[in-house]
Image 1 (cartoon, rainbow, N blue to C red):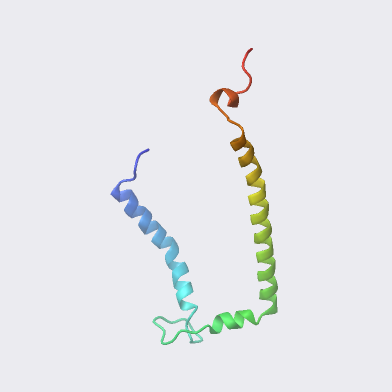
Image 2: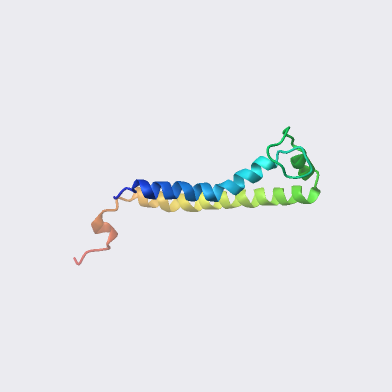
Length: 103
């Protein structure tokens, strides 16, 4: 296996930083106590999160999203565990994996 050189690692670090920077800014600005976006802010506040929690539509959507996520996680975990256990319980060698031999 070939390792990445320093130029490739620097490129990947810059790329990941470029992708995550807007997300980090939105998260940071969401704690402002003002009615407009501003950085740096004087004081931190949960004002916007409290206003969001007061919306019944949002709470229903959040509940449904969590239910769908739990159902997907359960089905993927149970659906992926069975084939893994089958392949683990059989000693699959190169000969057994290729099928029955000529004789």
